[in-house]
Image (cartoon, chains in turn green, blue):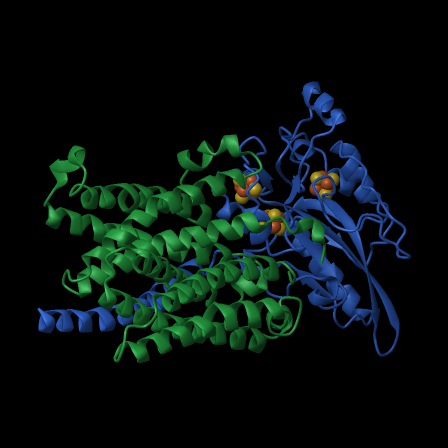
Length: 299
Length: 277
Ligand code: SF4
Ligand code: SF4
Ligand code: SF4
């Protein structure tokens, strides 16, 4: 109602997006390697390199978004279990160390002499990868739960916001790795196909999560129903239907399904999966943006 | 023993003396006002407005009614704002039960604003501290807390006055005694008696507002209509109360739903990979 209290702005949307992306890159790669019994080690390697730059950027944004950035150390010296911001600060820090530094160091040891002491220690690498993946899931979950424990109907009136954020983050993580796979010189068609297939399933899950959120919100009546109207027919309807559903979800899904269907006969053009990845990334960012701003319309 | 402020909407005349007294005692700058064709003078709570009177027009079937309500921090027994503060800047004063922000520790992340279930988020942000306040802080004696630019502000229950045997400034000033102050139990008794009397007089919707979802509040209201009429949530909850459920839906529901496709897809790939080798 009062614009003056819309304190959270786009920087926070970027932060939530990047946090989710970094977390998902870590576990996407780990799962891909582990479940394929090592066949897709390359996917894990690419994913692990993405983590540090993204997580550092998101931490910088978190600090910059504070009104008193120089006092940031107060978040570090305090641990308040009931505070999502506190849980998140700790999760991000641990994740940055394990997923962002230790795991990539193992991969780099095959190329960098200074790290040769880690070379060939695949057992240890896998242990750290799993720890990183679990912390990554925690980081991704936190970006959704942070908003959902607020007295803001669109975020907190139902338990589905975290589900949407996890699905969306997973999809963006897959998309980023897919993008790098498609760009890399020695293309692994198998990996690309598998990633596309996984992403298409995650997109369907995300669509279901969106449907659940909207039905639950509108069914709850009162302010919650008003909040769902903001995205289905109100101020943010364009952003939701066109930006998220059409561009961010249905278009990449169609591209991926098309890619998979032709892959059996011929090599699908690489541009196709790249376009799908970019759309997923853009859509994922719009998801954070729409919820951050749209949520603040109805209090 | 926890203290409580009682605001009786059936006695309030909307003179806004409480609003002025709060500004004066706490050395808070006047709000800039615009003529809106209404009786409002401050439109919303903000960093320098910790208490304001809201005017509500209601067209009941039998008559037209005007309701007043004092918007302010409710001093929840279980404060959501304190639960979400990662800096540990918000605490409950053990002596009075009032919820206080330590502005020295606050980083201005605004999580407390979004977590608070009342009045569209009670804690409000302030970019600047005015000259008068700095002078006042130097003064030293009646300071309820340091004022820091770039942090959150709200009603402090006038702890500085209470600890010196006085009532909060808004209570002392209220001409029709619509505001009262005392032990929480005592205030609840006063409120219940008042509601009984109002009911006798035909105010069928008269009720005490002391919502249990937040453990009860340090500001108790006597209302003459349903809470929603006043812009109050009927059943406010501590916003972090279902944190675990939300973590679980985030992680288990979506987490498993995400691991499963990976497992399906990459497991299949493993088999293919082997076949091809
Ligand atoms: S009303 Fe809001 S700001 Fe006041 S104690 Fe309760 S949660 Fe905190
Ligand atoms: S804005 Fe200040 S008081 Fe509020 S949660 Fe953040 S650090 Fe704590
Ligand atoms: S108790 Fe003190 S700080 Fe709170 S509204 Fe009254 S005068 Fe203002």
